[in-house]
Length: 219
Image (cartoon, rainbow, N blue to C red; front, side, top):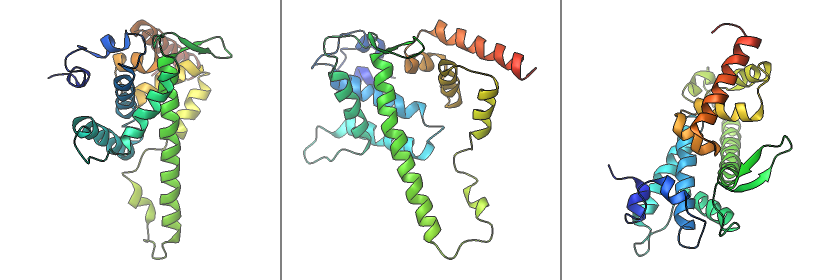
């Protein structure tokens, strides 16, 4: 199966690694933004299932048809544009270059910073959507006798997981890694999203297991 990045670059790039190995330029920033947006939707599917699925499908459709006359792009393409605008600030640099350093000394790459910035937009959209849903629910007078059962297929409550991570004294980096796995990512996808190597992901997994054993107990 032909990779999306290969298809939409007309064969210029074999995979995303080839694309992101180049310095950011006017020739590749559009495709970089589109690929980062797709990656965001893929990795958030489990957590933001309905929202991420809708945006992902819309963006895929955009990439196939946006060159057609009178075609209107979906909301999903807004996230690709957010990523493009962010990356364009760093024209001439590579996405693995350092964007900024956190208070704990951790260096954040341009790619990861872009992923986070685009993710913030998705988080805000999700919160607004949830608020609209709740407001509509409150305005509805004929509530069912057992409304809890109406939401059995909604997104799971992660409060217990958050409490468990706090009890394990995980660092922010370790939490981010665990979130990746909670969102259904494999090792390679987690490495891409976090802007680190696969060995970095493996090391964090070992640290998480060690802390679980230390603070919680046996599996």
